[in-house]
Length: 353
Ligand code: SAH
Image 1 (cartoon, rainbow, N blue to C red):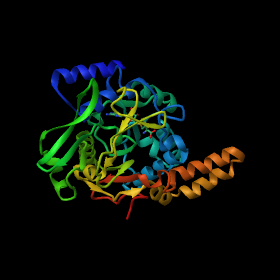
Image 2 (image 1 turned 90 degrees about the vertical axis):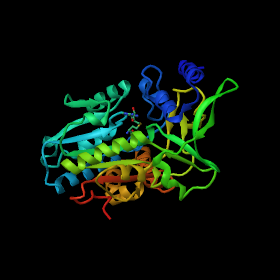
Image 3 (image 1 turned 180 degrees about the vertical axis):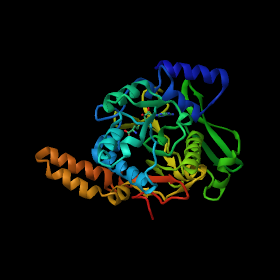
Image 4 (image 1 turned 45 degrees about the vertical axis):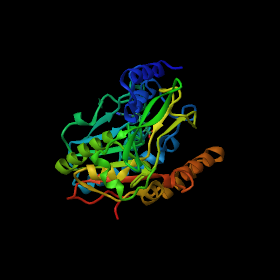
């Protein structure tokens, strides 16, 4: 029994069933008991592992992609280089190292990180070891400048709502109490405008998900790109249009019940990329599998160069990491990449048609 569970149950007793988005926000971001607020969840000993933690090649290639887009847009200066949800700062460290040789890029960039967790902010400061980082709680406070942005496994952590299609209309899935435990139930008929278009591709019993915070962030980024230039790379698991219940909890690399011991497991949902693209008032690339994206950026050649320097078990684990990032049976297809960019410029490398 966690303190957060007591608090959530008391809130439900007082106010009635809770939206899934409110439950997710409390579990992940509660300042005292929230999952991200209280720990570094990444790595083999943590609850899950992400692409930048698997291999340095991931951040390197993202860096070269952003720097190439910057060159193609005429090497503007100054620029905002921003990452949302940077975890331990590994992707950003690899990105910065890989772009050191791009003339003018480092002189032009101002580094901004969007991160709410104090534990992970401290980890990012340690990993990056530089004095010129500005942290933000939210995207809105980024400065006005061309924006070169990356987010890996960030949008999947944002709170979602779920709606089930019934014979009589949509009903929201809410979290209430049953026999002294947290349990899902259905609310009254409600028809939020953001799911009106889903009547065409759903049947009775289907669940659809919405992520208002993700759409608001995409809208903010898109407006900046259209006005100031830049590019935003979004990598996450999900689909162009997600269907069904994708809400999940992971603890110690294993799936677990998301309603048991709130605040102690990572909670995520698949990213609905179409909703992000439509919220952003700028151009978007098509959505492509992570494996294809990395292959098009040249991960094969980079993997070979690194492999030549390694022997024995270190070489084996490097090659396993390469496969893990790109193989369709591993992260290669489940994870996807999409870019937002100004309609007046070319799409970034790796995501061009
Ligand atoms: N991008 C990193 C970490 C992914 S974990 C990697 O690939 O390894 C999700 C990250 O998003 C964590 O850093 C978490 O603290 C952050 N995060 C989650 N929700 C957030 C929110 N609403 N605002 C800002 N950061 C958030």
